[in-house]
Length: 395
Ligand SMILES: Cc1cc2nc3c(=O)[nH]c(=O)nc-3n(C[C@H](O)[C@H](O)[C@H](O)COP(=O)(O)OP(=O)(O)OC[C@H]3O[C@@H](n4cnc5c(N)ncnc54)[C@H](O)[C@@H]3O)c2cc1C
Image 1 (spheres, rainbow, N blue to C red):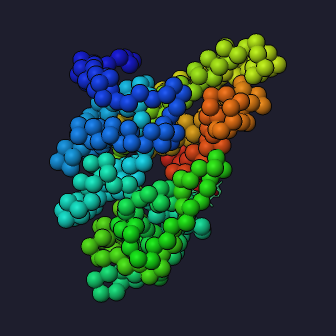
Image 2 (image 1 turned 120 degrees about the vertical axis):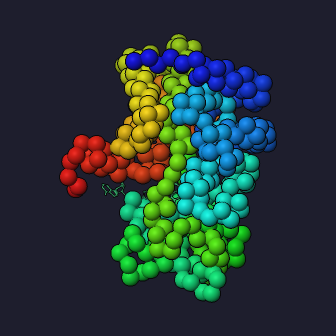
Image 3 (image 1 turned 180 degrees about the vertical axis):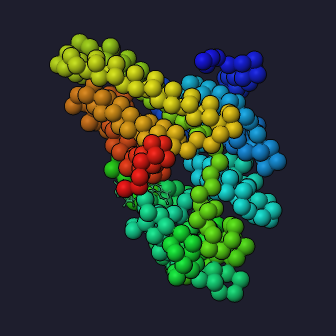
């Protein structure tokens, strides 16, 4: 097994490194994820525009649609270097670039591609995903939001929940029921909705980390033109299942988590003798930190497995679920270890001058809970691994 770059990958890595060195804003040590994004919005937007010009904002998209058409390995190198250099990543664009765009590329008409893809690829349009409802999450096909044909439009009534970025989004990918009598997977249609349409109401929901990421969205007789149906009426379920790789290997999050552990280790070393140190009181903490470091190395290997499958033209299936499950639960263990290292001070959030690491650990601890729910819960991922990976019967 050779994990080194070949000549082509090494050359590409140098190109990425020099682009980052000359163009990327410098991020604060230890800041990553959503925090890095919002910390300096204007500067980050300028950086994302520069990435967009190179096509690197959608590295896996075909060049004809404005992507970079990178190979799996080049995409991996790009993501790895961005994470290693702690540069801000355009996470607010991920529903457009990682879900809506690829679905339009595969199932959309030429007119739909012309209308919707350029704003995504320019790094300008924020999209949101209107799938989940209060009674339809893991069992998404139970959704009840209705779309009824009326002339050249559909009229939408119903409600979505947990809609990330709906308060900032220009457009939504929306699943609605068009045939209430069909078996539940077969009566669903996939729409694109303009978030400024009359009858759309967005109400904020605060998460337990006290940030505003997601929302409830209500539809009261909202008109959506028939041209905004992606694929065929009643076959939206199959379009909804389409995603292309934005970053399937998750190498970026693995590196980010390794950096979090390193910063905890630095903190433990620096404060070993003072009042913020829990190391003196709990000598087992060094074992805990060692365990987290071993786990993050295992997560890296899972990433390599996924990227190796992809680079051989295979589609990761239960392997992607293994990685999502392992990474998100590991993230929670890292956050918990962070609390053990910082002791009671770890509970202080932003705004307290006594909070170590500017209160980041407190935020990470609270936010890490949601990662095991969003994008399919841990139980759902375990079901996939058990059935498709281990060949066990359905529950
Ligand atoms: C931070 C965050 C952002 C989100 N953003 C969006 C978004 O932008 N758009 C959107 O549409 N949705 C979004 N969601 C919703 C997310 O997709 C759902 O929360 C998720 O699919 C789980 O659905 P649920 O909350 O209805 O829980 P439920 O499906 O009701 O599950 C409740 C519990 O039962 C378990 N369970 C359910 N079914 C099974 C089963 N078959 N076997 C074993 N256990 C089971 C679950 O694991 C869970 O523990 C977001 C969620 C979060 C937390």
